[in-house]
Length: 173
Image (cartoon, rainbow, N blue to C red; front, side, top):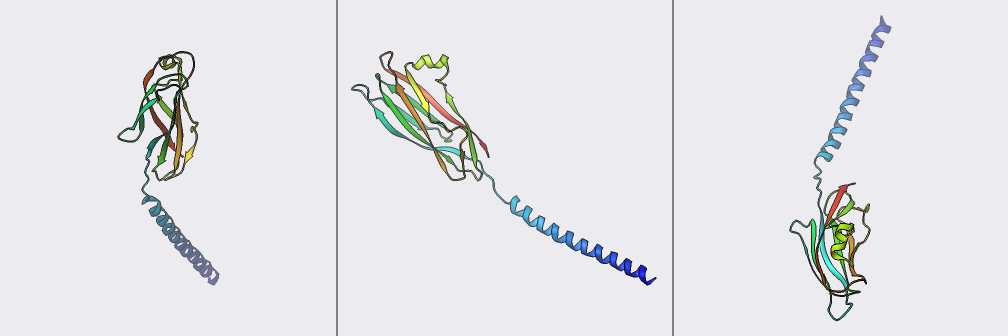
């Protein structure tokens, strides 16, 4: 009989210890959950600024570019005038990650996409080149530079004026 009472008491003690351990575990998980729940996640990737890097004249008239960042800072709108062969305009656009998470640049959206044959002939012989930023990861509160170059190749003459827009396609990492 005494042995049965000892076994029963042992089982009760083990169950009490188990309940206490579960309570402590629940408290730890609740505190950790509260920390993560109160984090304010934001996603905000913008073009912070665009500045002219260089301008090369192919003749007496300098190429011109009117550049502005859209109101919500998600697009760069450009109006470019190239005057003669060997004109070149270079810009640096700063992409800023104001998010609380790292982001990856999936693609640069060009409008119109002058790399496609149907649009390429509209600005021929001018070419548009962008630095390769696809796949780059920007940590929170960091920036990345995108270089944009317009070049008037040989092949024809005369002034070329055209509009060009750039936007970002990004995802959280």
